[in-house]
Image 1 (cartoon, rainbow, N blue to C red):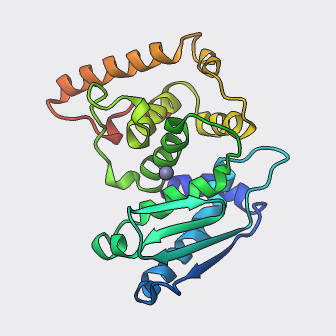
Image 2 (cartoon, protein in one colour):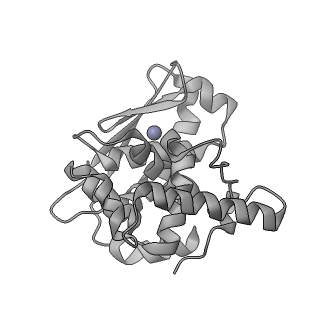
Amino acid sequence: MVGWSLLAGAALLAAPKVTVEIDVNRSPSSAVWAAQAKALAEEWYPELADLLRQSGWTPPRRVTLRFEPMEGVAGTAGDVIHISEDWIRRRPDDWGMVIHELVHVVQAYRKPVPGWITEGIADGIRYGKFEPQRDSALHDPERSPYRDGYWSAGAFLTYLERLYDRRLFTRLNEVARRGEYSPEFWRRYGGRTLEQLWDEYRAWYRRKAEELGRQPRLSDLPSQR
Ligand SMILES: [Zn+2]
């Protein structure tokens, strides 16, 4: 995390400031957690905005974290992140969830994008760049294909990023945000189709699991070029 922060540091100087507001009107008991989440968002939002930068485009400059009684964990609509008060009570260490939702604010997709890409980018950044120290286990691709989104897609994208393109998240986000994503995007990586790249990842996972005698983890992915 520290290394990545340093890398982003130079661009950070030019990054637009963000105003983070917290709204605990419907959940006053969330106030302490909310204040920590606000500090986290102020630190990380500029880095996420830099990672998903695109010339001629500025991400939202205001973000609201709204705490409330609600179903599920959290959800983002525009620049408002809704967070379940019950969830943070049960999982007070889930700061990665805030990062995941902040990515959605920065993505700001207005045109249709396959859900696995939207969620894969958010979880790839969350697990791979915000909390690499957790060294999360990689889902078995035979049981959980990339189309499941989230970390199943995020780990696959991180594998491709490490092997083929250190700017993959930036580039993929840009075509998605422009509404120009198509399966042709993947041809840039050795002329292969998405399914061929997926087969390659599945084969890598199988080999690695056999070699290690356990489920591969984030740190077992190929190292960055
Ligand atoms: Zn999401």
